[in-house]
Length: 439
Image (tube, rainbow, N blue to C red):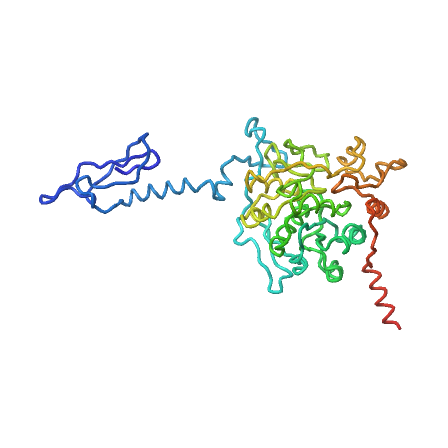
């Protein structure tokens, strides 16, 4: 008798030859359900030396059983193991009780599934990534990322506007060469607009995408995912990666102390200002970040850390890239929620951990929170109010978000007893070259 996953294959009446006893080769089988423990051994009772043999139909059952065993690890399972509401329009809500209250969209995949996750050019400074089924070209300083050790930091920054000035404030303060050589700015937009800065400072990771920061076409997720994918492909010495914004101050020394060489947070995989409750997508069209049912029909986001400043381990990023999750997850324009989605896909040991010292707000008052939710700049929110910006300090802080301007950045830096090392701006360098050419 052959038994598999609750089914038994029992022999029917044997077809006898006049000169021989029944053999296993001449038996037919019938399928009946059983409740006993399974066994895959079948032999002729009259011959202990008979070879093990399975008919094609039995092999079919075995293959089907193997498929059932491996199915939970396949992309098809990830796509279908939870039901999905197919909205017909932006605000076409699912029926009541269609989802459980805690359901997320973490295991939904984009389509069509990509054939490859990444390609690297021969000179190693450029290539192509796949993020949520979309091919994205990039340029990055391979050798500098390769040499990055310990803590590596990626800073979201606009290619134009206030972006260049903010990058120089950071290069002159917490990211100066005297402190670290492992800070990289994440930019997009036309290559011609960023080419000179890219070549001069050697600290930009550029992607060939339009600079859009709000709505369902936001570039923030593409920048963030590209950063993590690139440092995984190029960098072999870093242990923890921080992602922040260009209006933040990062206390590199304190982060190194707590996350390297046996520090108290060295074994964490995903951490920051991470609420320990599931956030609901806002369906309010007047909100700064409305979420349509076409984009995300599920009732809850997974646990995630707020995007102003969070960190991840090398192990987390390795699973996200090599496991194809960055390439295949369903696109989400909020970069912080996207990392929470990756965490849920990458295993139960990768989860959002709240740690002290990540300051998303500056004053953390109801007034500041209200202005943030309504997308009102702090200069307008606190217009005529001398309490903004608050006192500059980094006591017990790892990351401080919402740094107001150059003066504020400098004052925060000096509060740690550190010296400002002003770097030359690209405009200054160009002016010097122009003067030399005229002499």
